[in-house]
Image 1 (cartoon, rainbow, N blue to C red):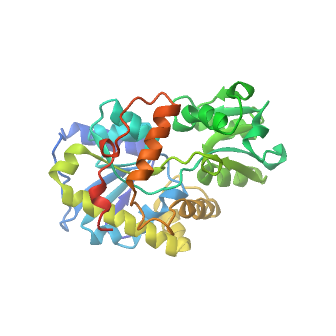
Image 2: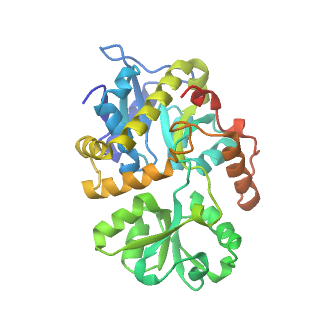
Amino acid sequence: MRGGTFGKSLAVAGVAVAAVSACGQTAGDSPGQNAEGLSEVTVTLNWVPYGEHAPFYYGVEQGIFEDAGIDLTIQPGNGSGNTVQQVAQRNTDFGWADTPPLANGISSGMPVRSVGVFLQTGPSSVEFFDDQGITEPADLVGKTVGGTPGDAMYGTFPAWLELNGVDPADVTVVNVDAAGKIAALIEGKVDAIQGFHHDQAPTIENQTDKEVSALPFSDFGMNLLGTGLVANEATIESDPELVQAMVRATSEAFLAASEDPEAAVTAMAAGAEQAPDESVLAAQLEATIGLLDLESAPAPGVNSEEQWTDTLTFLSENTDFEGPTTPDTYWDATFGEDL
C-alpha cells in the first residue's frame, strides 16, 4: 500500500472525527503533512465500505493519490446527510455523498459544495425478490415498500410513482431504519425496499441465494445525480490546489478501477475492514462502473450544467426541497474543467 491509510470501523471513524475536532481545526486550516511531505487528507464515505468505494482503495494501493501529493485516509460514513454535515463542520477534509442530501444541506446554510459528481446515473431504486413478479411501477400497487424517512429516495418516491401513473396512496410505505431495510425484505416484513440497487441487491443475493431485481428510478423517468466529492467552501477558497489534486486523483482512480475491476476489488478486500465478500464487492463495483456513464462523460467526476439543473428542478418541483435551482449554488465546476 502506498500513501494512504484506512478507517477500520465506525467506532474508529468516530474517534478520528473527535480527534480532529479536539485539535481545534477551524475554517481555512489546511491539512498537515506527513514525513514524506504528502498532505494528510481524510475522505468520509457515504456509508460503510461497499463496492462503489473500491476505486479509493485501489487509488491508494496504486499510488494514484500519493502521486497527487495526498496521503489519503478513507473513513466509513453513516449516511450522506451526516457526511455532508461532517464536511461542513470541518471534521473531514472531503466527503463522498449523494447529491439530493447535499443540496438539502446547502439550502439549509451548510458551507459546502460539490466538486464533482461521479455517479452520473443515480442508483435510487425499488428492490425486491424476483418471485414478486414486479416489472414496472404499476406492479407496486397493493405492495408494501420499506423506506427510510429523511433520505432522498423516501422524499422522491411519491413523485416517481405519480410520474409513472401510480397513485402514491395505492402503495403502502413502511418506515424502516436504514440499517434494517435489508432485514425487513429478507424476513418478509415488506414486499420491496427503497435502496441503491448497485449496493444492496448483491448483498441480499449473497445472504439469501435468491435472485433480486430492481426498478431503477432512472429507468422510469427520474434520473438524479448520484454520489460525488464534497468540500468545504473554506477549503475551496484557501487551498484550491489541494481540491484540484483530490478531484483529479479520484477521477484517475475511478477510471483505473473501471479498467481493472478485479484488481480494484482485491485492493479493497485487503484494505477495507467491514467490506463485503469479494464476490459481492465485484458485483457492486461492476454496477457502479455502469453508473459512471463513461461513454458520455468526458471523465469520471465531470458534470454538465444541464445535469445539475435537471436534478435541482426535479427536487424543487416534486419534493419539499426549497433551495434555488441555480447549479453554481451547489457545484463548483472549475475542478472538472481540465480532467
